[in-house]
Each structure stands twice: as structure tokens, then as C-alpha cells.
Image (cartoon, rainbow, N blue to C red; front, side, top):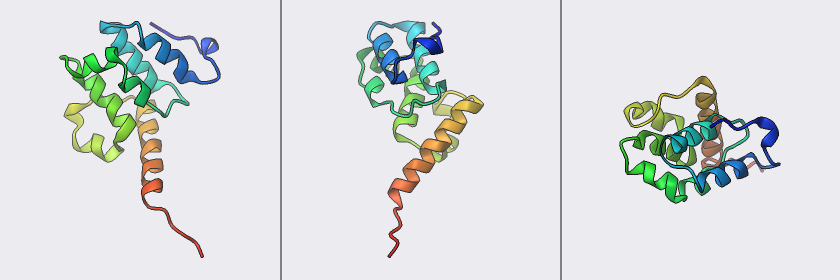
Length: 114
């Protein structure tokens, strides 16, 4: 399953959410992989709530669910400390997770200027 860029709506996540309602098995794993790889998608909670995605968390392919959950709620440090729980990240996925980590750290350590 490959999603063409020109098929994206204004919100690229919407296309994946629609596909997520009907995918199973290997197609579900590929969907997770593509979401993690696609630029501009930085929100993953809706996908994690989908029944087809939740099933992955209770399967031999739980690394896919763990990795999606990492992108939603974890940090790059979490990845480095527990690499065996997650998929091996591509360079694009690594950069995306690092960006998400910076945002997470920035929101946790707000500095007030007077």
C-alpha cells in the first residue's frame, strides 16, 4: 500500500485515518510505517485509538505499535534506552522523533522572560 502525495487532503493524517479503519495484517503494519515516515504528521493519538492499530499492540508485531506509541508519547532518549522494543528507525523517522523530542522538552521546560 503506497499513498501518493497528490492524494493527500490538506491534513495528511486524514488519509491514514481513513485507511486505518479498514486495514488488517501486513497492510496495517505498512500504514504505521508510512505514517512514521511521512513528513508533516506529528500527531498519532487518533491512530493509536483505532481497533486495527490496537490489535498490533497485542501481536507478534508489537514493535510497530510500540514505535507508533513512542512517536506519540515518548522521546528519542526513550528510543535509545530501549531499542529492542522498537522498530529500527530510518533516517527520516529518527529526525522526526528528534523534532518531537525537542517540542516535548520545550513544553516541559518553559522559561519566562521578565
